[in-house]
Length: 85
Ligand code: SF4
Image (cartoon, rainbow, N blue to C red; front, side, top):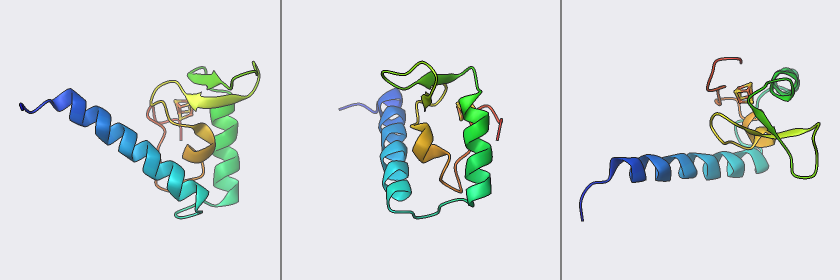
């Protein structure tokens, strides 16, 4: 089997996402409430954010990194991929 860099990058991305969701749901490494509120406001008004299923107004996913916004904005160590927060 040969080393497949794109496959490992994709696996790393999925692992990062799964770990982030787990930490967020278990409330590990959670940011302050005012930081979360500020991030939510930025993401909900970001043109890169993708709407939730069944909604045109509420955004659920980042269109740049593919992360679930509700979990991403809650984690202290997360960053916006285009430096909006
Ligand atoms: S994380 Fe950044 S790029 Fe993604 S939706 Fe939020 S503000 Fe936009």
